[in-house]
Image (cartoon, rainbow, N blue to C red):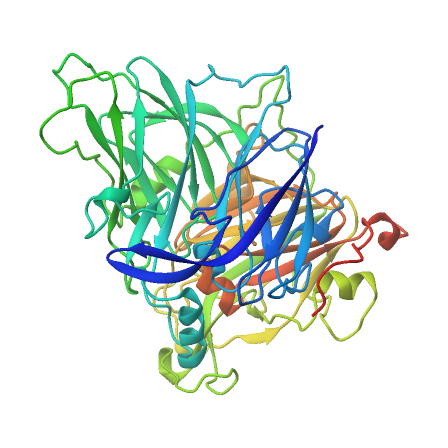
Length: 550
Ligand code: C2O
Ligand code: CU
């Protein structure tokens, strides 16, 4: 592969949206930040300069980073944050990924504005498994708050309660025509009749899964999370925070004046827990034919599923299947060494166990979240350093393979005795090469909802999914071991389960968490430490000497 060097300057910048000006972190003065381009097997060296006024880290979401956890990025997991005025050099090692990924801040809620696309092209001399598109366009879905996102985090910590909803969903940083003071900034895509465009759709939102569609055009889905899919055609897609979807759009509307020349692209929330507030606004961008006479009326609007349409989301997701071709084969593990059943819950901790000054969570507690009833507590130094240098007292290697008790996980009438969780920094240690199956089980503790679970260091096969409680005798019979999709983030259905498999052949320290930022903050996280045979430390890439210290 090729080696190239880029630099990202993180700086406070004035941004105006929805008639409000605020100061927010941007990268190289851009929001969203610059796109990183690479080819399969490249190595990209990124110098990150923190010219802002708070600690920050950057993560290369979906890049496996083989034996290179030191450049993965989550704060207090693989590194201490980069302090204001300091810099850190990340090495991004691309191996199996091909398609679309993204990068984002991995500290507090900074990724609201600190994010950008990663485009990984096929190796020189090889091509896409679909006809070459005329143009490729990153479409980054996000959320905008009029307030400073640092204030959001502070507010959550002060009250122990929930996060205020965003003021608008966005497409490439813009709310679009339906919002005040936004028309001029609306993102526009110019197309020519008869050409095909590749939209690289990324959900960079902090709190919501989303539906996305383009009026008058079907979308042919060809990839997700930098892995190719068997193409299928839909009117709209569902995309969870952290995920990417590569879709082909054929500009096939008549340009003789008989059709509109402009079409809205639209993104709006897919809400699975309607007991809590959510942003129900619709972000828009415009697709316009440059070779058609401009039409007088407004652009056509796409037909998106209703905000609560779980059936539409399920039907969409069920169509994701790996391409599984000769050039892009699958390698689904058929034998499992370690079975884990991991419950996902929003919980409470007693008021006073944090630094809150008011307690507005359920039952006057503070909100927390857990995996297997362990609410992950951030350590004071990063777990990777603690592992590498055998520093005691930073984490405990006892994250459980099963929930501590079995109950009717998806019963909507669970008693309050299920609300509390414990807080600890528990990790799961794996021998090198272990084949792991994780069944994520959603629970109805404080209300069931879909959770986008993300794993660092690996992509995984999504071998099964269903509603209700996972049945370990029956449900494995329904697994797809032939062409399951290969992802780094999977939306666990509301009151349902998902089974994933991966081979732990990447030594290091790897975070696993819900990609809703409030759940990550509340502790819906754990860590895998993957050893490497008899001499683990020697095999993990040496710690960079200039890395930030806590
Ligand atoms: Cu996209 Cu741990 O994150
Ligand atoms: Cu979650």
